[in-house]
Each structure stands twice: as C-alpha cells, then as structure tokens.
Image 1 (cartoon, rainbow, N blue to C red):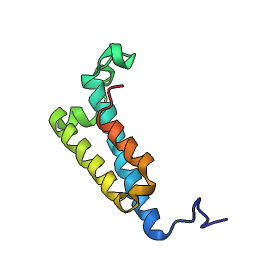
Image 2: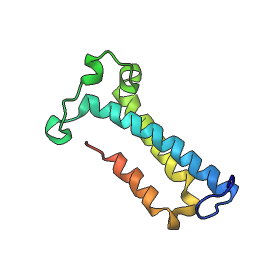
Image 3: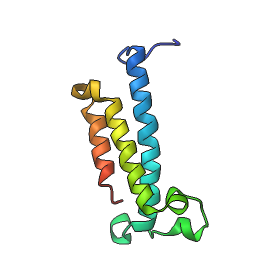
Length: 105
C-alpha cells in the first residue's frame, strides 16, 4: 500500500500541499497566540491571557504582536501560493486560509 494516495497525486502536487500544510499549520498556531493576547472572552468563550499567566513562550511573547500579524499574513499568503496551480480544485483549502485571516475564536 505504500505510495498510494487518495486521488493519486503526482509528486508536484504532494509537495505543493505539503508546503500548504506547513505554512497553514504554523499560521494556525500563531493565530492562537494572537487570540490569547487580543481575544474577547464573549466571542471566544474562554479568558484570553492564559499563556502569559502560565509564562509560556509564544510567538507573540517572543516577537511582539505586530510581528505576529506580519508573519501570520505571510504564512497564509505562502499557503495560498503553494496551491495556486490547483485553485479550481482547492477551494476548500483556500477558504480555510481566508477564514483564518479573520479568525476571532
């Protein structure tokens, strides 16, 4: 079964979606870190600031909020660029990126 993939993608597609996943995954973590600083308890359903109270090293605590937003947007752009050749068949993934850009919970 090794080497069998759903939809039987070629190596280029596997690499493109691996790049998407790497960028999107890191962007998601940075988004969590940003929300822990900027989030609203009424929207999130939990108290922001827990990472700071727990003295956790986060992207925002190490690099600042402005750099976190900059990196988040760069990673999301990279994720979209990675799947650009497949956009007609990758709307689901592009939609995930766009939702993460405006995530508030």
